[in-house]
Picture: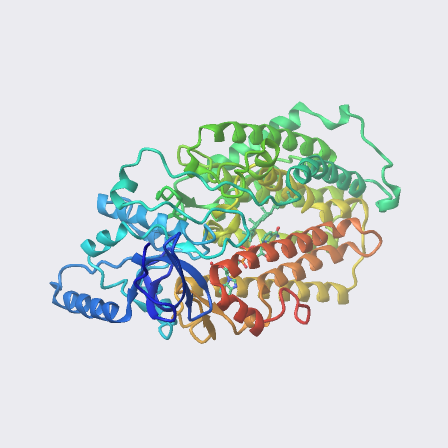
Length: 609
Ligand SMILES: NC(=O)C1=CN([C@@H]2O[C@H](COP(=O)(O)OP(=O)(O)OC[C@H]3O[C@@H](n4cnc5c(N)ncnc54)[C@H](OP(=O)(O)O)[C@@H]3O)[C@@H](O)[C@H]2O)C=CC1
Ligand SMILES: CC(C)CCC[C@@H](C)[C@H]1CC=C2C3=C(CC[C@@]21C)[C@@]1(C)CC[C@H](O)C(C)(C)[C@@H]1CC3
């Protein structure tokens, strides 16, 4: 009969899963069967820990004192080796790695896997920055991170991997790893088993099956409605196009050339090379951040084409054919992605697209970062052809409007829609690097949903206001123009300020631009901003985006609902995304998140819970 070393009620130091940080915890109970202690952290989080992840207060203090004196006596020339629990930190490391560093990285990755959510948005923080943020939690946490010597770290490694969350948070994803010594981990030939997706989104298999047909049909319906004289929803379906009119080989060729052109631009050796977030296998992919240059070069190419009297209104005249061509490419690409994922190692699979159900996994995407050599197909599709295509199509609609309505200059409504959306796209490319830390890149697989979203949904629905205005002119008074410019400006300010503030804070909380902000410390060492925009609502960046979305639709007037499609989509997507993100934050930050929710009760809209 095993006996426990620590007693119920004892205050001891417990390791936080996925880290080298020790916190003061209270022992709540001991399970003789699993040999696990249930402990409660000061922030209220309850976890199950192994005995080897618990140490008594006295031994812990002696250990810290010993390692401090050791670090003091270290020769000044020898670099201090600091270990991180953050996957982001590793992204700054030199690409020529030593075996030691690789080992350490693998350990970190394994540690990170123990965290309830296999992702982090923290980006490129260096050890100094991270340390600063940890200091925010100094009142609750003690860290031996900096003081650890290599031998100590490695000795400890053996017992580090099976910290277990006390409660499965209901996400159905495995958060437990078998205990392995570091040597076992490094010499194993097979990567650890991938997390199986059991918690299905979007209504599961049946839901995604219908979505897969509904989405393309909905976009088609939107086109038909936007393009026909009477764009009211009641008049649907009026002008159903013949099957023949949906296809044109020349258009298909143009779409292929566009994709190729954007792919070549993305490979140009201009712009900085940055490392993405560490993958499960410990590797990081390198990305060339040259989207802004690619946008400029695309603008030059389009300028030259217009100068050569290429009639861009061709895009308007063949809009449906462009859509069907893109849809065919999306379908073929999704099949390719699904088939190639059969050869992907389990480690390369996305946590959300590995249910074992073909339809579901095809839709959600099995592989996280499908690459051809160094070319990350997902990262490319997410930003390049769709976003650039959006701006190009808008411009083509502007030309089509002048042609169809015999105008010498584009209408103010068309100009506003073009300028507002161009500003957003330029902003996206200017901050392209930040995309690397987003949920879509770090967490979601690349399947039909994202390929469809990136290559057809973005260019063919985000352009619906401009498409609508070609055949539905709307006069705008000066008052309206000023109101819309102000609205877009306010939305953009909130969107940009909130995103930049969070990014700067995650990078370096002591940055003078953000150091004045009030924060709530969390047990993970990261803090949550609780003042300024992030103290107003819990997702101010979404609010800014929605205000902009409204300013993009209002220029089309109030005659029809159809130009408000983007706003309705954005609202639905961001409300769903907010719920998804909050669920993950609750798991990541436990009671600190609850405290944040109490301090900032509104989700996206001020005054609305
Ligand atoms: N137009 C469109 O189609 C779409 C636009 N977008 C836009 O993209 C942008 C990014 O969106 P998205 O990635 O979804 O979400 P966020 O940029 O809001 O990222 C959410 C993460 O931020 C961190 N966080 C949350 N609250 C706080 C806080 N108080 N203090 C510090 N960190 C906090 C958490 O991660 P951690 O703590 O781990 O850092 C959380 O997981 C938004 O502006 C959105 O509007 C997004 C989707 C579609
Ligand atoms: C119902 C559809 C299939 C859903 C598709 C959703 C996608 C179109 C969007 C999901 C998140 C996106 C983002 C951008 C584009 C649209 C998609 C892919 C974004 C890259 C655009 C540029 C911005 O600056 C951004 C903030 C980086 C956006 C991030 C999210």
